[in-house]
Length: 147
Ligand code: HEC
Image 1 (cartoon, rainbow, N blue to C red):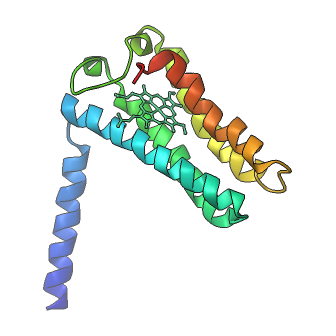
Image 2 (tube, rainbow, N blue to C red):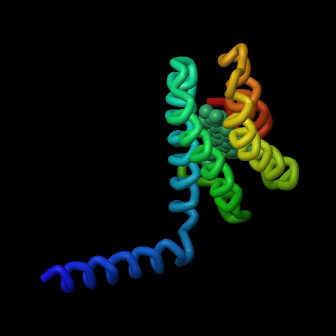
């Protein structure tokens, strides 16, 4: 019985990975990027709470998660996803793709740097502002529509 269960589970995982690798529709791409940004927002607030309470180990795990999410986002702004599905992405992204990607990469590496900068930081809030919240503003001011 366990063997059957395990086999079924394996097959399920296999199909799941295949479908994840297949082409995403524009709607799926826009929805995925929106949901990752929303998630990062929630995670950033948790990082702030944890770090302020000196809970650094847990905060660091979430910092790395945010860093990985930014890396994933790099793939979620293809040419065919400029409009539709309530996107707030501005055309400036595709007119300045290198600058946009650089900001995203910087946002990702800043979260990694934060994992060490937070150790012994005198001003936790300022450190989070510099390495975490600063990235949001830097990008939104040019690449996300007013909302
Ligand atoms: C390199 C650029 C970039 C960075 C860095 C960035 N964002 Fe964004 N963000 C965007 C863009 C572009 C959109 C619009 C995406 C869309 O609607 O397709 C967006 C959308 C959002 C949304 C709305 C998601 C939705 O459901 O519509 C939230 C919330 C958000 N960002 C929060 C943050 C926070 C918080 C940070 C920093 C911790 C951050 N973002 C960092 C570019 C960025």
